[in-house]
Length: 370
Image 1 (cartoon, rainbow, N blue to C red):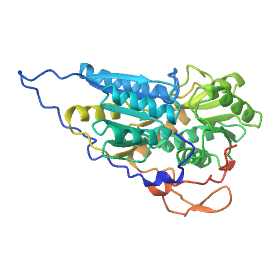
Image 2: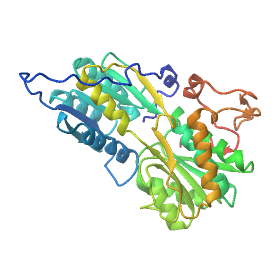
Image 3: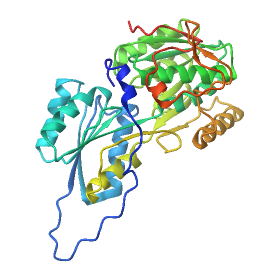
Image 4: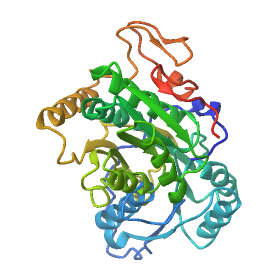
């Protein structure tokens, strides 16, 4: 996650030739017992009960659970993007970590720089797009979950006005805002979405303030693309509705949460770690979504009628099978400036999605973060 390098995201190609791994050959009785593989994780914010970092921490725990004493994992939390990240990543490489996961867009360049210095170390740049012989990239199709959550929000709103607290106007965030809006308007054509930009991924006080500002503008359901639970807590306090992101957040907002978009990294992290153990790790790119089990919509709140839950889950099955794509246009889709961005009957390609630099009709906001 990072506020620059917006257009360049389109350079990625999303296929991992080595995503399925072969079994590790049995060691001979005389073979020397190998030391555990040291695996490092760098987190952009503190580990909380829920949120972006929590989901990656759950991924680390899944590696430990699956591979046991074959691995020794460590993590460093609350590492700012930029020079701090480079220092931490280098320290991990220098202390014998042979696989390092760096899950934040702003870690991409520091990861590449350190990777050149440690060619025998494997790096996984999560949400990055630049690869190297020892740097792979992976991301999730977050927009698929956003569309599904938008359907729930469109059914639940009474004011027809939703809010969206957003970090930076990079394509990943724009994809989410647009998919959420399209999901809402697919069941509620009157729906509008008001966006507030923060220029930050993790700033709980400002996340809360932005939510409160939106609630004062007729917003009765809110979504967000930031790293804490502050927006959920604000919705709970104000008696509004909210879409949880990254994790199920009913612990924070038991009455406010209508649905959660959860990110699941455990299988991917385990497979990539096993590949290093097997000696089969290869650089490459993956962009996985509902089909790959990396995105899931669940955690419906008690206020959500069964019919709405069933509708969202049915659409989720369609996304998984490829019969529903959030950026397929039955009729022409325009941006909020009136320009056609998806022709009738067309579906955006991955390259077009990765280059996304517009806000869809129905969004009240601009691309300029304040």
